Image (cartoon, rainbow, N blue to C red):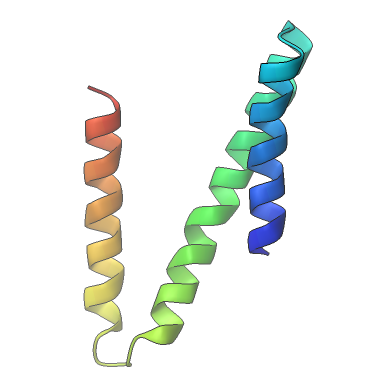
Length: 76
């Protein structure tokens, strides 16, 4: 699953860099947004599998908090 996510995001960024047209921008937006939408739940599931059952809530909460802080900082 992770190679598919990487391929989607990489193809999106490469299409904008190489082509530079509106159609390429639309394709890139589709690829990057789909890759991002699939990546977040995939990484969360991978994190929760590797944590012990009594620590899963802490791990998932920390991931959500760090993700929210990243979103805030990236919008500044």
